[in-house]
Image 1 (tube, rainbow, N blue to C red):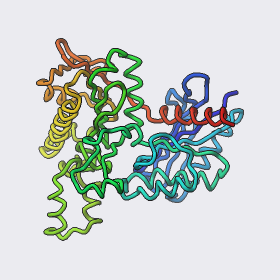
Image 2: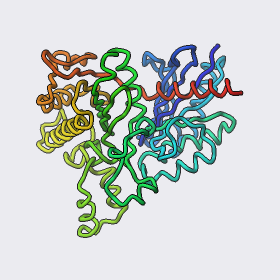
Image 3: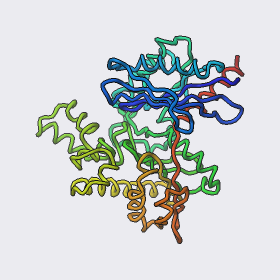
Image 4: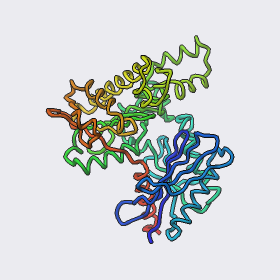
Length: 397
């Protein structure tokens, strides 16, 4: 029997995971699950690749680091797939800073360096690192591997990555990094499979979800992206503001008497779709609402997305391909259609029937831009990186 790798993808209030079998080709999914901490008693659900429930449990007490549930995950894996050996745990880590341009084994030194990056991703970095500490405690001999959302953008050119502030801050790591790299890496690879002629063309991938960003690609490489030093920049998001005049932040501190902590909470938790609508951060709720503020929030989301696709096209010198992915990008036909309408001047035409049915190709007749919907799969990318590292280690040893 083949060995396995366990992949963890930590979000702000839940953790997705997948168990992958190591094969001669691409790692294959054996089961997937969710550690959901929205409720007072965190819940663990495990499903097979077809989505059928295999296992479910809850903890009796709130477990901040998910320790009990992770132990339950391991127990389930050993009971169900005990003939296979678990070789490693792969983690999605949001920020890799200037030092990490690819996957890395998680040693104490590496973990300390990643913890030091928490101010650059205060909402995400602690959540990503908490499972690392838990697995170190319950399985200290099990190798753990970090895969970074920033790594895909590591080669951004100086004009793209640089802020117009004194260069001494850039030397300290204050620069644009970009995020959602694992998603962009998967989608770029899938695009190359279904439309290889597009790879060398000017492409923008729109990862639209509770967190949202764009990536401009050519030859499969990131050329520009909308997020910057932190995951706050760029598009309007569920509860995050996206791009904002820095003078607004000064005003809030100087004239509204808000502390740094108050401003941080405002930008991460009270802004975006939730802040503008006053109703919800969930695009589905807003699209179903008749409230004027809900429609205004949706309109702002669409306007900013189209505006920044045009910005990416400026970097690329044009636009040949547009790809939608992420929860909103994959499932909200109204948003795809509205963004397409705003980009008609760039030659985007979306076929209404194809868009309604969420087909893979949704470009309309006469569209100068090829338009796709490609579901993302960050866990698959992490599994691939883990397997590659394990094989390299085996070859070296």
